[in-house]
Image (cartoon, rainbow, N blue to C red; front, side, top):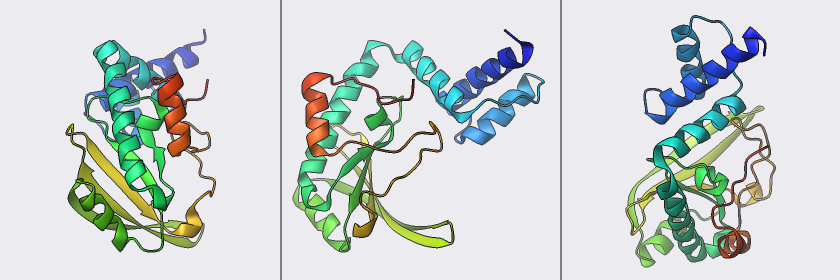
Length: 204
C-alpha cells in the first residue's frame, strides 16, 4: 500500500471519528482537521469518510444500532402513511441504514400547499417543535423548501422537508456518497421492513 493511500485512509478514519463524536459537523472541516492532526496534505473523499463513519458507529453501538434502525424505520413509515397524500420519501441516514447516536428521521414530501402539512401532522398526534423556510441557489435557480422539525412518540427527532410538487421525482446527487439520492417511498419501505429491515443503501 502506498504511503499516500495509507495516509488518506488514516485521514478518513480520523475525520469519521471527529464526526461521530461531534467534534466536527461538516465533512470538509473534519477532513481538514484530520489532515492537520496527522501532518499531511492528503484529503480523503467524502465516500471514504462516510464508510469509515459507518465502521466507527458499528464499533461503538453494536447490535443496539440495528434495533434502533428498525424502530426508526417503523416510525418513519407511520409518519409517511400520515402524509401519504404528499408523496413522502424517506431519505437521510434512516434510509441509508447508516444511523448513529443523535441521527434524526428525514422525510421529503412534495406539495404546493405546505400550510396543510402542519395540520395533518397535528391531527395525527405529531408534536411540531419549529418550522423554518430555507432558500438554496442551484445552477442559477432559487429553490425554497419548508423544514418542519418534530419529535416521534419514541422521542426521535424528525425533520420533514416540504418541497414544491414539481420537484417530485427529480434526480438528486448525494454529496457524501456520490450516488443518486433515491430514498424509499411507502411501498418500498414496507417491503424493506418485511424482508430485510436493517438493509443498507450505500455504494459498495
